[in-house]
Every structure is written in C-alpha cells, then in structure tokens.
Image (cartoon, rainbow, N blue to C red; front, side, top):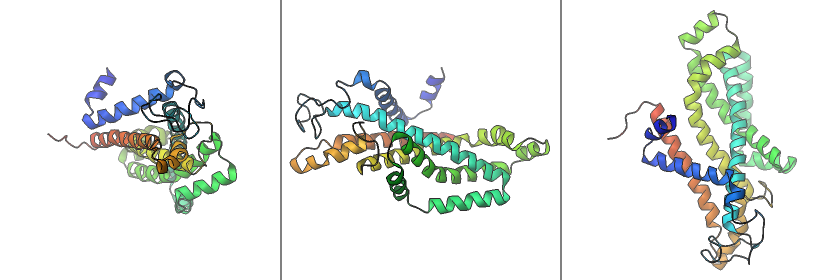
Length: 276
C-alpha cells in the first residue's frame, strides 16, 4: 500500500531513476547468482569484442566485463552507502550538538570544520589513504570523516533554524535534556532536508570512490570496481576497444538516477505545485 502511494507520488523522471536504482541494487545483492562467471575468473582473450561470445566483451586480462559490472555494483554502491552513512551519523550529531548548545562548543566545532573543509576532498583522501592504506574499513572511515564536515555544516544550519522555534523553547522550559530535544524536536523536523542531502552526498561519495579507484587507491584487485575498470581498460581506446566506456556509463547512469529521485523528493518537500 505504502509502496503504491510512494510510486504514484513520483513523476516520470523520478520513476525512471527509481527503477534504475532498484535494478542496480538487485544486481548488487544477487551478484553471485546473476553473474555468469566468478568475479575474477579469466574466461577469454584480452579485449574480446562487445556483442560476441561475451555480451560486453572481456577486459584487459580476459575477465568477463558483464560479470565485473554486476560485482562492481555490489562493491562500489555498498562502500559508498556505508561511507555516506558514517558521514551523516557523525556530521548530523555534531551539527545538532553545535546548534543546540551554542557558545564555545559551537565556535570550536565550527572553526575545526572550517579548517578541515578548506582542504580539497580528493587531496585529503589521497593523503590519508596513502598513509593508512586502502583496505575497505580504512576507505569507509577516511571517506566518512572527510564528508562529515560538509554534513556538519548542513545539519547545523538546519538545526539552528529549528532550534529558535517556540516548541523547542517550550521543551527547554520543561527541563528536557539536550538529547531529548535533538531526538524528539530537531531530528523529525530536519529529516526532509537531511534526506535530500543524503542522496546528493551519496553521489559525491560514489564519484570520489570511483576517482580513487581510477587512481589506484580505491578498492583493490581482485575486487571489481567501476572506477578501477575504467582505468584498467582505458589503454584499449587507443586500439579501438571502447570497453572502458561501459563502467563509465554505469557511474553516470547511477548518478543521474539518484539526482532524478532527489529532485522529485525536494520538489515534493518544498510544497511546490506540480506543472500541469
């Protein structure tokens, strides 16, 4: 029932985006059963043509590209989702604390975030990953911490707008604790903008992971990753093999699909009337 109502509330472009996201999620969840081969199995010659024996051809060492794309959906999307969740949990919590406590706590947290956010994201990622390594846990932690900073700014701004409302002041006068106010008053009223920001931030995290993998600091072989697949097959373009465009297209399609869904979410949440 709720899914039907949710579906009816989407316009055509948002439905397309949702279908793409669900399709890629299904590919990731059921990758071992959907993929025709093992994730790292060599099944043919180097760069076998697209549409031949293998639907999407083979990569630079003879692995089936369709299989790698399916497993890449699982690995890349799951990593991006976990890193985004870490960033939002930490950033929203710190942002709410800064907004509700104010004073020296707000100033210290805000200035620390200003210093951290002044460092370009990719440069910060390269520095930390080069020093700490590139295992999955480190990737999640480093990317999550880096994106905690912009989430903090958004959460703090939203919470400050809510914190001055009368119902929050009433809660303070009743003697409610800081945690109760954040949980019962601020969080429910901040969910819509934070949910929209979560989708957009997921795109940034997803693209950062793909960029790091392209540079060799993301998910490491033999794990399949769309960014690493672009890098690994890029040399084939000089020889007329365009296999690297397939994972690049997957990256673009997922990013567009998420933005189509988020645009509809923001439109509905803003209360704007649909175009006739």
